[in-house]
Length: 520
Image (cartoon, rainbow, N blue to C red):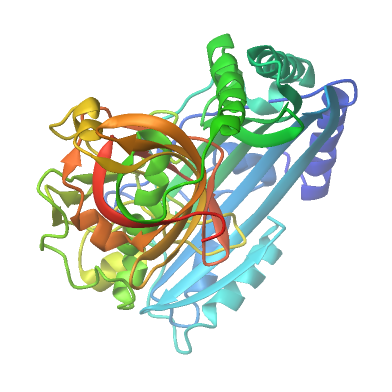
């Protein structure tokens, strides 16, 4: 017989376990079979079927269907339950000492009811049935009428996972994490004697989710995440410079191989010391060649957000009426993909329970699709894309990117660089912002190089790139065949929510972008 474990008891047990492994040193986690429900067809599943991971909280199909029915009780068209239990660990080193560590545990439910395009949403931090019913009743208030729909019987099926780890992070002790941090420190300092200080952290999380809805969908997923970040301070002739490098993946402890640790530490040191030789950037409009990988953040921010369907449903995005029309040269194809193995932005299912997929946004210069959640897919009368994402159970889902990248083109890297007489080679962006409507952007370039007579010359730093995303997209006239993905520790912010994403880019040449320095 199953014994229902109360929320307080469970959290106390988790806290006790974490304390044991965290006191002397640090800790880490993984997954089980993944379930996604097919459309409600075939014979109904018997009431009261136990679930997988959330069975320990006393959740079963009978309870979920009562909660879903409460959501429909005021005439709503659709109701949904999103459960989440997330355990996160963080440990940091500064000045050669491991001196900071903490653990957080989040447990709760988000309840959503849709009535047309209107959304009712409530959340609670208790998985007991009375709390779930109360939250569902609050969400149900978006409608004001008699119930006209009943929730279908819940049924689940297995789907393929894009990530798998053998040992859950929740079972990895701090003693396994400390060596990773110490090795990162040693590798960074040994890389260049000018490195005088490092700040390093290793974080991991294990997020278990369940989505059930009134159409009979039932999904459980395990979403692990691991991050290593190394920041360096270097000194030369009384002058100091700072930079960093991070890496992240939906993976376990084995992801942090000696090769990965060395690469992150060396890049952090190199990105810092290269700045001592940097000159002021050129000012004015110049051709810009974007390096592979991390510069994909420009693709993500300046172009990708404009292809999220809610902005187009509301008529905010410049791409709102461009489906089927040319928006870029023929050699430009842009993908948003949630199925890349272990990538930071990958998801097996989105936070509405829809299976993840590879979505072609732009095909040979033609805008083919937006990124849809349930609401926008119904509005545009099209299939969803598995792009409904949320930061946690405290938020409703909205259309968001996963891993956004441009496919390879017909050119070679050296050919692209060699085609520019005078311009800028952008290597590492550190942040940026965009006005979604027109697509105007500003990006801060941490470092890059001048291009003079088709050759890379002096290092430049502290440049600001200012332009318009759709216009820059239209001027990409050369695309190399060297696309690489970047999956550092960055987050994407939208509607007050932060989610992990990935992005990628081959070497590309864009037309004139306005470049300004620190004082321009």
